[in-house]
Length: 253
Image (cartoon, rainbow, N blue to C red; front, side, top):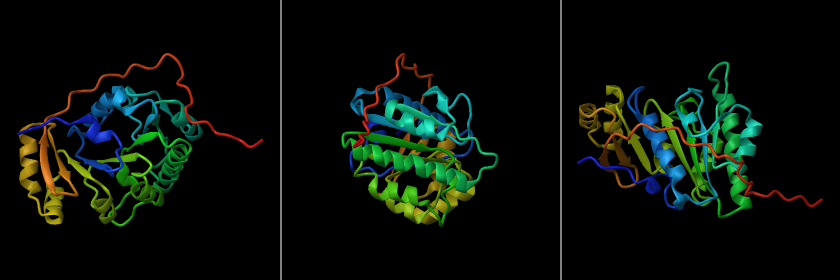
């Protein structure tokens, strides 16, 4: 039986969830699912006025995350936007996909989320990193993302990492709640079956029977649920007025 996602359960920090991994080959529907569900979350009042959605999209692809917010290409302006706007979209322009350069950018953004959380304990964040496999490898997780995994839950910061192939990293296995799987390569299905003891080969066959459907594998309970395809996202209306800065920085002078 295919189910539908509950948006609050997916994106709303509750100091219990630790984050999610989203994986699927190009054209499998993962980006559409993320954008569409993010759009629903952005519009929900249950997330509160002080919730922020921060998105890093190295693909810099029009018609994707820019449906949710106007992209920003300057990192300093990204940092400023995070305190002023409900949704911040960063389009980093790299001459080459240099993992070190991207890691530095992500570190600045993650540290700013913690700074804002310290200034206002009522704030909360959804952090989305696309093409996460550029800086996350089977043996390496950047320090900023380790901090996010260890301390983010208490600060109500929940990360979502998107990649074209499943990122099998022991650190992430121990510090993530969900693995969302769309259509994958046969070799990845085999590896996941060996890693988690679940028949992901058969799961992938079922996903292919209904295009753009997907499964959620709970890494804590080892449970598996199947979900219907998510509707195509529509462009989110832009606010007419600039959102008030809810995070006040005080100076002793």
